[in-house]
Length: 242
Image 1 (tube, rainbow, N blue to C red):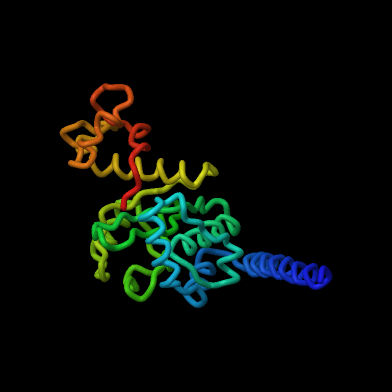
Image 2 (cartoon, helix red, strand yellow):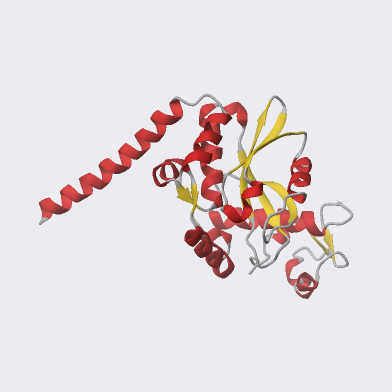
């Protein structure tokens, strides 16, 4: 019995090593962002059931509860939700050429009943490009390799003209990809989003007058230093959007 178990474990380990090896071998033959985009367009598929379960988990437990596949895992399965696709493009672009400085871009959707979206931003020749193959046929008009742009605002303008079901862009921002815990990263990301959305006079903080009704109800609790303003650090105590 032990021998059977050991053999099974050996096969699993071998499959994992083979997958990583196949990914590295393939990527070593790629020369540019066009190669990454070509693979994504021809091979990657949006997993609708997984995406639905991710949305449910985010709404019940917050963004930090959701895991993202590694580039090797995505290469092996060729499917996932939008952040799996964004992570694959980000890591693969940076492997091909660190000068791409690829990172996550988070897109906040104004349609409250619909999910938000993750894509990959990178730099080339001093311009911003965006790679997005991480959604299904319902958002087909958003998919592709976009750019060049002078700023993320120009990418927002592109999104504002997209005709996609249950999608209306609120804003797009660069999102942190450091090695902090998922929970801390999600809290920092949400704080940046909320600050950008409600800081109308752009002074880096939210006054009681600027705060939306739910925030007003918790304003005193969130205002740790009692200065009657909420800064980015204090906004990290906000609960996740449900």
